[in-house]
Amino acid sequence: MEIGIGNVSVIIFILALVFVFKTINVVPQQHAWVVERLGKYHATLGPGLNIVVPFVDRIAYKHVLKEIPLDVPSQVCITKDNTQLQVDGILYFQITDAMRASYGSSNYISAITQLAQTTLRSVIGRMELDKTFEERDHINASIVNAIDESAANWGVKVLRYEIKDLTPPSEILHAMQAQITAERGKRALIAASEGRQQEQVNIANGEREASIARSEGDKQSAINRAEGQAAAIVAIAEATANALRQVGTAIQSAGGESAMQLRVAEQYVQAFEKLAKTNNSLIVPANVGDMSSLIATAMQVVKTQKPSVVAAGRQHDANT
Image 1 (tube, helix red, strand yellow):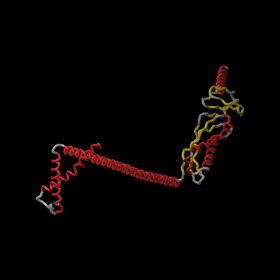
Image 2 (cartoon, rainbow, N blue to C red):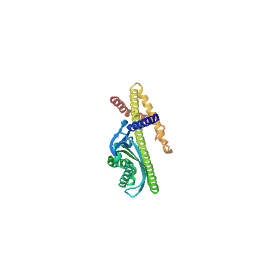
Image 3 (cartoon, one colour):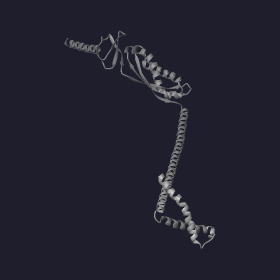
Image 4 (cartoon, rainbow, N blue to C red):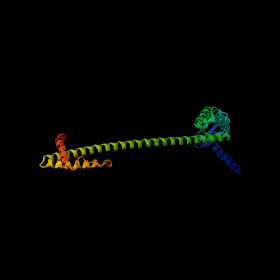
């Protein structure tokens, strides 16, 4: 009897442990467990300590509420201009309703994947090849909007979609490379021509500035020469006037008239001498031996010119 009672106690203890383990459930953070009672949805257990009825309640589904990345398999898409593209991407989603994720679809991951592929083919089919490379953000947004609307019934929130690779056929790649090379060559030619044009403009501007500088220099040089000539004329006139005044003063002084007559006679003789030697011809006066008559003639010229010389000197003094 004692052995039987001990065995029963052990069995009861084991059943009690099993009952406790079946009753108490600890749900981790960012997880949700779906409980079925007698095969029917009963409740969703949140993080922490939860108590269920053993052998009546059952943990049917366990969901992770974290953001989940889903790799979308590569597929061939045809663009609007009939070009094949090998496209693959990655989808990020999160379970927001554990009950719908359990009963809304038999396999919500497969459903999301297939929907992402069909939507991607539809979006790329409405675009030309060049636009697919330029408008990746538009493609990603279109796929997210299309999937998110349907995935709401599955308790899933699609957060974003990213295209990983867009791979056209090798022939298209070669053509695109040739186009890029030609475009870069065109830009290089345009840049070179613009450089030559700017060079010619700079040369023309430099020549124009140099020509203006030379003309300004010539102008200033001509002005300086004219001012120099004017100053020289004024200086000569002033010197001549001073000489005339001194001559007039000397004539009016004692003995000045006689000295002036002598000077004029000498200059008359010298002038006659120079005139006689012109063109290798010898010119002699009619009466060479009568020098006194020659001097008398010169003195007569001085007497006739004296009033005019004195008047000119006085006129210059009055003007100055």
